[in-house]
Image (cartoon, rainbow, N blue to C red):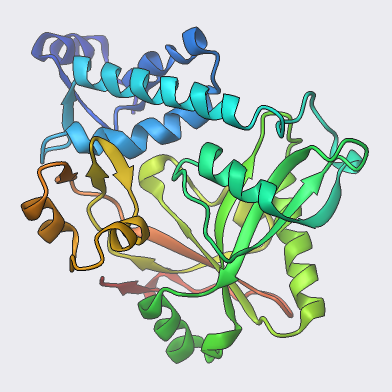
Length: 300
């Protein structure tokens, strides 16, 4: 529902607004123009970091939110420069691009341009590439499923062998990507894995707190099969840190709260986050719809 002028005035007067207020956030994201960065990408990074500075009620001061936007815009501009040699120089039609496995360049792109800024090591990477210049336009990484609780539920409920479940862990498109590039890439990955013969199911996690809806997966005939209760976001020195990175850097720590208690550089979000969505796609045959009442909620 749009914010009425009277409500907006009250929010400005109090100096705080809900981090879910997309109208106010969009105005702040206008700062992207000053930094020459993509507003869509800046929005995702900003939403990832706003909970670090929001209170338990989910509100944040305008000054703090503006600082988050500016910090992420500066980081995004720096990250763009780091992979400038790999970025496409123009817009493409889907018919101009070639599907192929890709190598180390995928790690460079995911480490810089993906909102998590962390490539999944040991993954198989695929992309839509300009066959003339080699420019990567859209890419993704897939790897064997490591999330035990999700994998166990898939085995119990759907009878898929654990070893045959793979995860789409990273997806990224440059500005020059054509419409439907991600859904087309996912379809080609599915076909590639069908020929391999050892994968039966692809999964991925969609985080609605970052503005994601799973539209590209739905367009590729994926279906939502379950949800996962949200875990607090972890930040280290003001930057988001994934659990994978936490365990790599702090192997003796058992969880987010323990790290925050031990290290003053670590903090966590306190606002209530929406559940993550688990989308799935069978490699062979149609992917069945799971009614909402049959979708399990996984507790971490």
